[in-house]
Image (cartoon, rainbow, N blue to C red):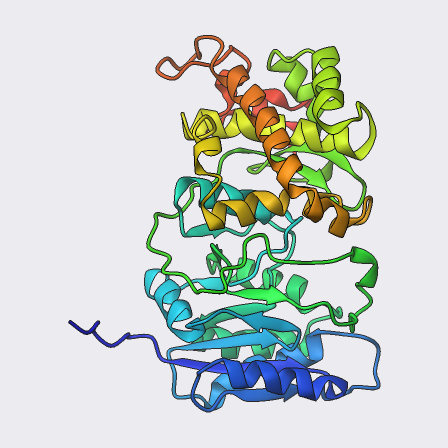
Length: 388
């Protein structure tokens, strides 16, 4: 039996600098979207910017006979069955802005890994920008965003896009697994010092996105890729002053710093520096995961032959530490790093299961009982709790 035709009619544009027309043509040829167009930077000799070409690309929606407009950058590689996979995601959230790429060290990447672990297909975007390597919008929203970009200050389309979408209350989502991989071409807006930026979990075979949406936990452990500092973010009160060092939070949850250092040295060979911060992040991820999805941490070792899970866990270390340690070397060490980081996550899940929660039901020590949807503000210093 054939599937019914999709109600989603796609139009598409590939934004590019004139120096990268060949790369953009390759992307266009791979899309399988009728009448897809190239959008060239109208001022290629101007200051480095992704905003100018992005504005042109979204303005193409004005002339399109479509329900949704898709914009891609010229340095991506798309999955098999790409257009059909995009349509499936859009059918689930026709009013949303949906990105098909999540950078492997970003905040949203941590949600994406949880999505793979739990079988979810869509996660909220929690970056301070909207991923724009492959972004689809309802056609009217795309037209409106092009107008907004035409006069917006700045040079980065991803930050301008997020500002526009938030001002208009458009849901900002990312599809998991990702349908595009980032190719390593020289950055046109000066981001080469950001290190290698790959997908958290690229699915070259395409995806169905038939799992549930991932709810946003109120706490998000995160390793800042630019500094190597591990912090715990209150997602409902997210500003830098409220980010708490992960070691301090884990200590409040019942972990012993000397044991954390000893275990990290035993499994990763160091008890300080970037690898220790990675270990702390994995412990905290295991604790939060066990609180929200009980039993999922303990089953991970039996699932390591699943390709998507292998990819998602394999990008954790190189994505988080890519500017501090050699990401290729970290990827090559994946066979030993992934089991070691699973050990750290299992340690964290033990913190979540070692005592009764204040809420009753699932087991957690008193401090960890605060890991729920909306009541982690007790973990913030008093001066931060009422910050707007």
